[in-house]
Length: 361
Image: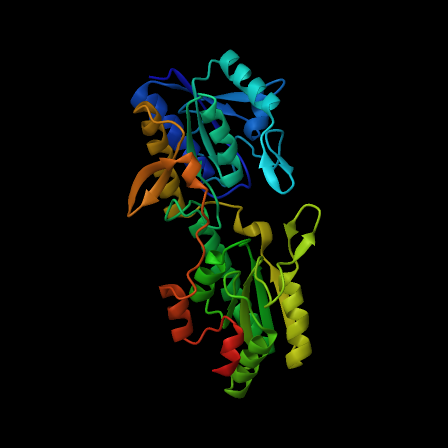
């Protein structure tokens, strides 16, 4: 049995991170008699002059409804470098981190993060250090788990935004465009679009045509609906083109919403407005579902360690929390099936995905 475990959070923040931290601490101390140390600012906290905090049941009291992470997080750091487009893990920082973990008397790690953070966690496992991962991405695009915490809260925020834009669109006879997160997948856009009564949903999995977008807007105009609501994932692509970047050096996506606005105004002569939801989707308090899922993940991560499991990630499969190898956890992205139930339902109720073939319908 481990005497003391470390907890860290990496990558972008997500509603529910504090729920996981709280569950880890309460389970480790109350159920297994382990001590807990929080590592600040992701893996960077165990380099150089280490940055840690002692975690007790008292110190995590009241954090369940809080957004963000009490441990701090980083999107980038010293542990991975990109070489010719592929991740490379330098030996020096990992060796230094392992030495510092020994000095801190931390016997095992629970790592909360997405594919990049968990890839670093796997490097620790490969060097014999016990690690359990907890999946974190509001995009809900990890194939190994049915859901990730933060996703449901992000949908709630995007749906509320669509509800509010709907009234403005109807009042002014405008086209309103909401840009939401979704680099490689359109799960947030699709769920929010269905729940928020969007008329057009643009997602990375279905390249869109502006002819089809204009056709839908003008069809609605002709039928008496003089406004249109469009939700677009940040990674959506026009047919024959790549995704749009606001910063090509940092590969930071952005601009697709405003691009759609300009093209819609040109092709339909209707007034259009764009709202970029941005970090509002990942901030603030988690909803009840994400608190529950995060709590489940945290408790099960500690139990997995206590049962001798390592190099694995907790995951939700068929309603049950299980574990999968870290090597498989982030190997595949879960994309929206273009002929799946949600897409069929959206089309059944008249939502357009602006695919080129839709101009022929």
